[in-house]
Image 1 (cartoon, rainbow, N blue to C red):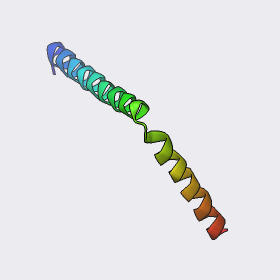
Image 2 (cartoon, rainbow, N blue to C red; image 1 turned 45 degrees about the horizontal axis):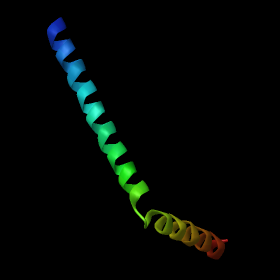
Image 3 (cartoon, rainbow, N blue to C red; image 1 turned 120 degrees about the horizontal axis):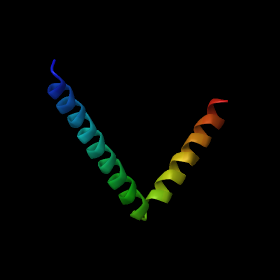
Length: 56
């Protein structure tokens, strides 16, 4: 493998990482903007507590 090929592979990996980070940041921003996020998370916590209470 030549130095040029290694450089191209490294650049491609870095580009994919940047795209993945941008996608994750966009999803996080959408969740923050959603008015239902708090309700869904609260419901999940309540269900987890009830489940653990029933099992114990």
